[in-house]
Amino acid sequence: MNLRKTLKVNDRGILEIGGCECTELVERYSSPLYVMDEQYIRDVVRAYKKTIETTYGNGNMAYASKAFCCKAIYDIMREEGVCIDVVSGGEIYTAIKSGFDLNNAYFHGNNKLYSELKLAIDNGIGTVVVDNADEADMIDELARACKREQKVLVRINPGVEAHTHSFIQTAKVDSKFGFSIKNDDALDMIKLLKGKKNIRFAGLHCHIGSQIFDKKAFALAVDVVTDYVAYLATEEGIEVQELNFGGGFGVHYAEGDPKYNVEEYCDYVKLLTFALKDCAERKGIAMPKFMIEPGRSIVGEAGITLYKVGAIKDIKGIRKYIAIDGGMTDNIRPALYDAKYEAILANRASEKCDDIVTVAGKCCESGDIILKDVSLPKARRGDILAVLTTGAYCYSMSSNYNRNLTPAVVFVKDGKSAVAVKAQTYEDLIRADNALDYKD
Ligand code: LLP
Image 1 (cartoon, helix red, strand yellow):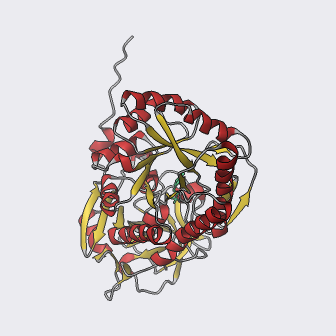
Image 2 (image 1 turned 180 degrees about the horizontal axis):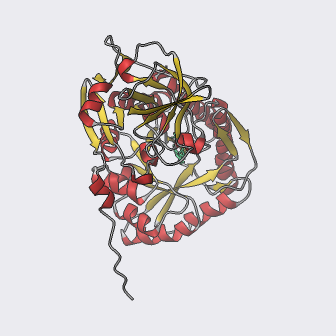
Image 3 (image 1 turned 30 degrees about the horizontal axis):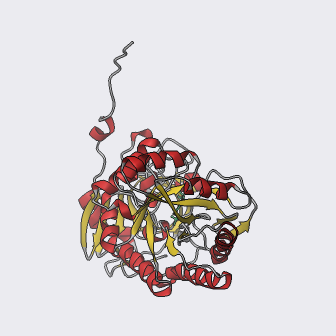
């Protein structure tokens, strides 16, 4: 089980996170409940930032909001002095409302809407990461209206594709993200941007995938991208001042995944900074500003989801199902990606795991299974089940399928808890519903 100082079984046999007993959290805030360990989030962010400062110097990290977005997480990122990456008007609006300085934000997206670009530029977005030619005119026009020069990066597709346990180098030009560097697509885009009066081309961005353990993939990306930087400098006279290598660091979900502590997570960052320093020196290019955009490795292991066990169905000789009061509406990842998780009976956490069960969600969908064949103590109705490593891409991908309510998000720290997002109510669900009133 992937426990740590701030996620442990206490001497009463109860799972504790951030110094709070999970049983008490459920009593106080009800279930299902997302719980985020604030100290863990801050520890990882500080460690990444420090690693960049000590091993490279000129650079920072941007937290990838898509992993988990709400005002409280932006407060934390602001306090820690790091940047954020946003991908929609909704994330931008949330950041503005939390008081985050958009000058420290990177705006991504393969189809940024005009309204989103306007919201971003009007509010002083620091960097737009350009992903299609249509954006150039829109950015130029919006920046002119604000009387400023908009800094941009160009998202390139370096032909390095990584998945959880392996990576491949492809000549693949076929992707909805980025411009290929295997043909002239990226160069044409850079030239187009450099020709715009109100745009300042600053550098390149790439993101090779998510939940990657194979560090060689990152090293290869640095090599390929710096080859391109050298080519731009020598052949085209184009200077690249900033390189952003995206996110993608793999985290522990279940048996078979490596387990890293905060220091070990920094190895991903060190690998990138060392590779960049080495490549820059060998290839004779000026050391650009270094950026990364991790999401999952910052909030993933910080989060757990607490559920109450309800119906138990033992199909003799076949399978035993225990059903929980949430499911694919608060965690779509098992149904969508066949993602694996680990779970603990939080109220009986030191009891022997002598039962094999499948944990079913409550949605009307047979694929709504959160864990398959996991060992737990014999569960009873009312027990509290904690699913670990749910801090990334669970709340942010939640839905109201079956009109189930989105659970609250509670942050915990030093034995105290605070609501970051209130639980939805039935009233919230029907707030936008309207009686039909046809007009011609
Ligand atoms: N930067 C860019 C441009 C990205 O596209 C992503 C993730 C990140 C940063 C952050 O990557 P991370 O450090 O979190 O791996 N819904 C999927 C994950 C999709 C990731 C998309 N892009 C999941 O639940 O596994």
